[in-house]
Length: 205
View (cartoon, rainbow, N blue to C red):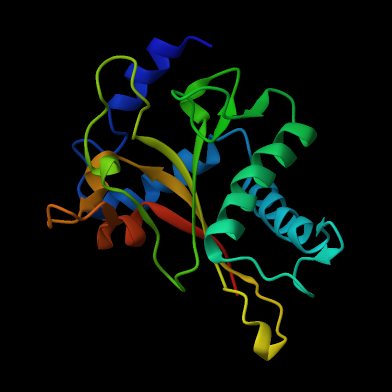
């Protein structure tokens, strides 16, 4: 990978100098040029979700007698989605070092993907560092393609199987994240404009 060149490319926002009314068409263009199709991305996410429910830990079956927290479910998706992409498609792999995105496109890092999951019905959150520009030349780029998944929590008492509610895909820049203002706040949220014009809903239930 020509890491530095690609990092420099991703520093320049594709939305730079565009008015917001043009963002949606730019988002469509960025998604269309990505090596993974919308259909492939959705299928990978749904298959990875199914993998969770076919998993056992010792004698415990997830969703039957073991009901992991949203944090654990998110961690499982973070492990399973890159693994499934790596198994199915050439030139893809999971994160190997701290400068990698969560899902790495070996041929061209520009198309690598950051993965965000949340048990919130609609919104996605990140560490407040996402609202800050890239740290130096070699830091992990905050700009680029993002895959976001909203899923339901386990509610064992209701005996209902949780589902994926929303899958979104698009391009985000560090300026799309709004850091908590409190000194102790460690979270960042996305701007309304990002949801409206930069993350396309590929799947909704």
